[in-house]
Length: 514
Image (tube, rainbow, N blue to C red; front, side):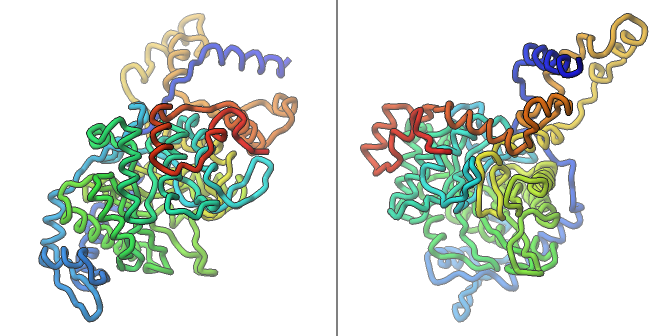
């Protein structure tokens, strides 16, 4: 009887509920504050001191010349640039406080500012776990197929290129990885450039899919990240050249730095925050010296080394604290922030992975991080992704966004009249009209997390979460084939560039998965 009643209730519920997302991207976080205002002021002040006293290493270059013209002292004997407070403060007056990263469908726009939260993919994994648990090297087509899956996941708000194209050895790798992502989804795409001379081509691809240069400028569907520092406080001059080209071509950019506490930054968490803030202040100063008011996103990806082994770790409480704190520092500086969560050190989507992902993503989101990459798909400390993990992480992200939304307190939600109706009349809460209305707008229902009774779970084959998520991923990968680039534009792109993703891989039957 119980089993049949459960199935009957499921059918009735499915008929009642049309999907309505009670926890969309862009909700405000900010309820979690690991730093006090005084803490933030001390960290930022210390970062100013570091830049004035220790400076940053910048080799002879136009970049260094620009700093010198702005009034920075240069010590050529050790190639260090010392940035005084007045130069930083002047640059901060030009900061853009909000940056739009547009979707090609406005429903996917990311309005990065304040404490608005968006969760998505990221990284440069070199391995992928297929649905049969085989682990192999990543290839170009994986960026397309993962993107098709992400296109269906409501709580993965953007698509940052997730894997390295290990099958390509070509100068066109930048264009091909970008194309594979754009062809899979109309969500905003962030990628990177490997060579300065490819940035112009990336902008041209962006113009073509946006519908023209003016449209791109108003609603950029593509952005780039530039990891222009090597911690501690040293500019990677090859990447600075790429950053210069990005600025020249008007593509929104993240200046990303990723110190590891105990390895490439101080072991103290506060010391790591001082160093990454100094790196970011130097970056925002440089970008605004080149082009005041540029669409710049503060790229903080602090991590830690496991001091027992020296290995990178992304699933720790310290990682969560550092990234949440960076969100607070960015809010103090009035800058949009890009940071990280969801980097499980676990090798499969097990209990460890769920704990690591839930903890780190909750910390980042509830602190009000704007662009939280790595929040879906990742395992093995950034080295690997798995199809089913994207599906699992979608449910984790949804729950966390629901936490960010919080509890609305109003005359209607206090429900005094509803309580009176039920207590004094023949009705009950389950049958009350208010409950049906709240069912659609107040409650989040997971895609794959199991809430069935044990009887129903056993009758369905006793599947664990990975098995359920694999079935979901397989159904999407076999059947969801979006046309995210207009066919006429796609034809132009293939004529203009050496596009290596076969058209046959982009149609039904093109997924080679097990």
